[in-house]
Image 1 (cartoon, helix red, strand yellow):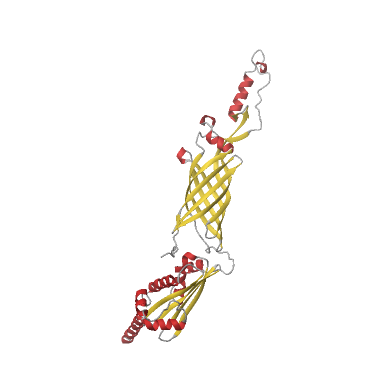
Image 2: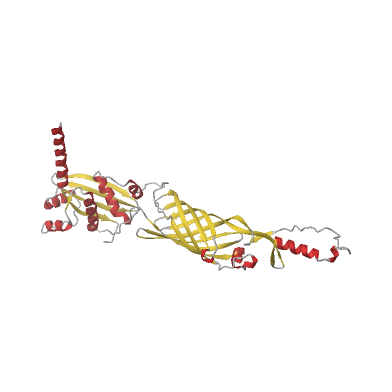
Length: 388
């Protein structure tokens, strides 16, 4: 039994060594409708084939040396031509194929020709979405499938061409979750007056231009190749550089369009503010306590309200006018809501996403205009630059 087991191990090792000893070459790939040359396409597939560590792969210099003086193989894509090339190179198999840009999709075909058997050994064709920066990864997926190797399923799902418009949480996803920094200008309304008002009158006595610092959390609930619908949550703090603390949290519905990165979002924003009741008298606002004190002192100072002995002819009646409210640091803290709209675009630099947005936030007390910029690092595999 032991001898039999050793024999099986030796046979398995022999088969492994034999497979590893097979020599292959990669010819140029035919390319249509894209700027990638057949030679560069062949180089990309040669790189991916080497990564598999499955065969001994001839490099381009060895191939050129072996083919020198044996005619031109510049447009060698057919089986017979590839077999002839493979015989001159003295390899077991030769790989070739095509990359075609057909409207909104890429079609990649890879074929493996058995040189000694003079036959087509394996072939695989895959359709991918319009991702011109991801050609190498498309080749990787197609080649690994051809050879029966493991494929990154999430990556394949993201790159594959979708024949129908679909809703998915993964397709077309670009996550912009990350920190946000910016400035806001309190542009108009009672809000602007409150910010610049003197502190003695319940204002902030601050500059209406303030810094913002926050973080954007987002989740995608609809995604296609050219459109994504998002739910965004953004906690934010403003005014720290002026000794103020204005905290808000926004819940937005966002739309992101295509690979260009344009986006639009809108939704409510929640926070807190200090409000006080009072009346505006002769152009000046009097708080409720101030107005009541002034009213009582005026009644108290009117001799007609008292008899000769100093007794009130009629008891004092506390007034109850229609009070109005205004923003005031002397007031009580109240919950408040705003409506927020934002528009922007995401710029990409390698694995770095840089979202830039302008926005408006306001309610009946006034409005704020602002701009923000953020960043986040894409943690999944990154685009491959085609420019070698």
